[in-house]
Amino acid sequence: MVLDLLTAFWTFIVNQDNHWWQILIAALIIIFTFFVRGILTRIVLNIIIRLTKKTRTELDRVIMLAFEGQLKVLIFIIGLFLAFNYLPLSPGVMIVLTSLFRSAIIVLIAWGLFNLAGNEAYNRVSYLMKLEQGLAIFVSKGLRAIIIALAFVIVIQEWGYDVSGLIAGLGIGGLALSLAAKDALANIFGGVMIILDKPFAVGDWILTPSVEGTVEEMSLRSTRVRTFANSLVTVPNAVLANEAITNWTRMQKRRITFHLGVTYTTPRHKLQNCVNKIKDLLKNHPDVHPDLIMVHFDQFAGSSLDIFIYFFTRTKVWTEFLAVKEDINFKIMEILEKEGVSVAFPSRSIYFENKLQSESSLKDPKV
Image 1 (spheres, rainbow, N blue to C red):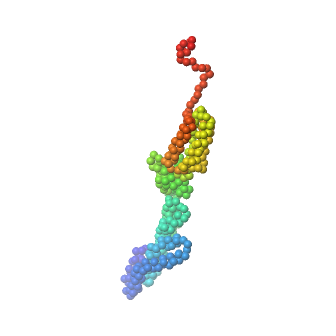
Image 2 (cartoon, rainbow, N blue to C red):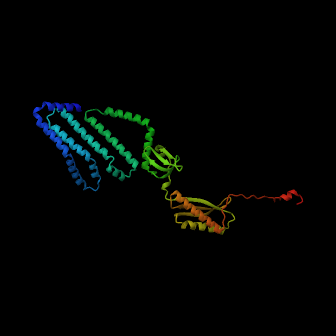
Image 3 (tube, one colour):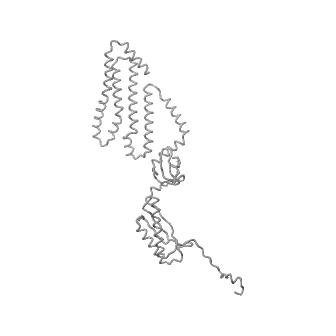
């Protein structure tokens, strides 16, 4: 169709000897439009910017600037249309030119919207909506795909083609594709759910029935976790979305709890002193969280008198947590040593109803 248009235009030039002045004016219009399109674009944008300064947000200005390149092309296309419209072309050629002009406008609008779905304005909107980076990228790609599809359908309809059969075919093809790629789609939707729920972020230490480690990378299909053995595990998002996830990084504090067993020979007052001194130690320790500290004589165990100790550290970092725990353990040992209290170990006492005979009495019956 474009070739027919060019052929008709060339035939018109050859056969219209008396209309060279019209051709010259059309050419001047094209040249003039080509050189002033930048100036006209700046004038239009300056007017729009002045109007948008009255608003409270800068998003409208950013949106308008996103169409700067398309505006230049649009001005040049308008010049082409005016130039060809100035020529006495046949009605058939003018219909083709009109369809080309309308299609070009549709493509330019789609082009601007396509760029807008990933520029600074989109980033600001996604930030205001508190979208995670992965979800923002996913939405951006989805919007761009929709824009391209809609522009294609509108342009096809502009040229008189019936798109109902095409849409029906795409629907059947999409159904077949979704059935074939159901696992991949499940992972994508799982990734979207993870991004929306925000159970973890990159750098968090998580524990699931499938894996434990630090999250290194998140995508729409899978999540990569670095385990403590330094291996990299890739977990499909469909699996993670259906599992219980423990996020250790989001702990406000780290817990330490244990039973300290001392021997049954420990006097009551020494046991009471140990309980009080351990409690004072924890209350005055700079690395122990003061919200909840419990130190109590808990139970009479099988081979020890058990002191129940329960508290939290301020730090959440594992290495620092171990250092605090070690320091407190040494200081508890120091308290026990000063009080003369021994730590119990599993033991069992055996009592005989009759006195045991010595080895010598067994050898000499008279003894």
